[in-house]
Length: 376
Figure: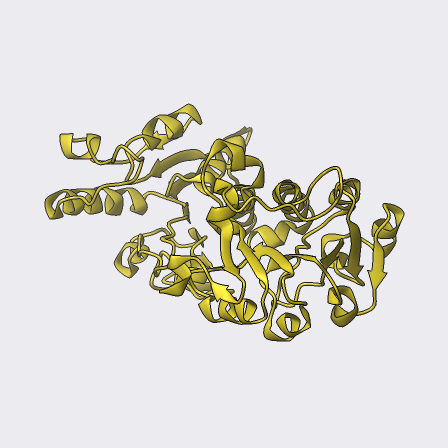
């Protein structure tokens, strides 16, 4: 079977869906791997590196996709690429299924079997395939590094003959994978770190990394999580108390990292314009939800702006700013997923449609959009 790795077409996308390491593993499954010329250039991978591990180099998208049984991408294929796919081709990529429903419909119309890597179930078997975690981990790290590079002061406390420099104060809003990595990175750089989240179980995680948890710790908060680990909706009274605490906390911060995303919906506003006005001049906000509308009303996706003396960083693709490592992790995720679909002895397609992982990630098959969340 032929596995194709086209060059990414999305503006600003620097990652690639396969590295020489993953190509070598894919070849061990009995697959013939073809890579479009220049596909790995932005991730510092030369065509010759792919050739060295047994891949062939195709001169363009038409050549690489011709007769491909499996197609690996970072972002979903555009309409022109979809038109080049053969009927029944398996496509695995981050398809942005909540927002790119029309693109998935085109894939379905082409007869592709499409898997959205974002829809992998959060089970232990799928951890090695979890692209959201691997990419969010890097995003949390890069957010702090970008903030530190932009912030006009040092991060750690420094005691010198000329006097003492106070450490920077960093607030992380949202304690998921990205938030936890941001806390750990900021602590390593010597900052005083605090964090907030609507789930009480995250308090222990924050404190284990040396951060201070910020929340109104009343009985309502202590019971604010369902048995499934999701946050319950809080009362208006609690929300008012929590908002007042966060507003007071924000005044003292030098750097804020916001990470709150709700699949299929606009990102919630965590830092209002009034809060931004209370921050010290030269403070930095890194908004990881910029692509989804932003956790501040002043965030401009893809831009770095200064408003009310505060620098707001709205980079749209933070993992792509670490293309080498992001590609390395993402390609391993994809290899682990593809390993499920291929018979390791014969190299033939052997998809178990009843597998929980396969069912969770599948969004299109046999000319139809199959996932209810994408159909609606």
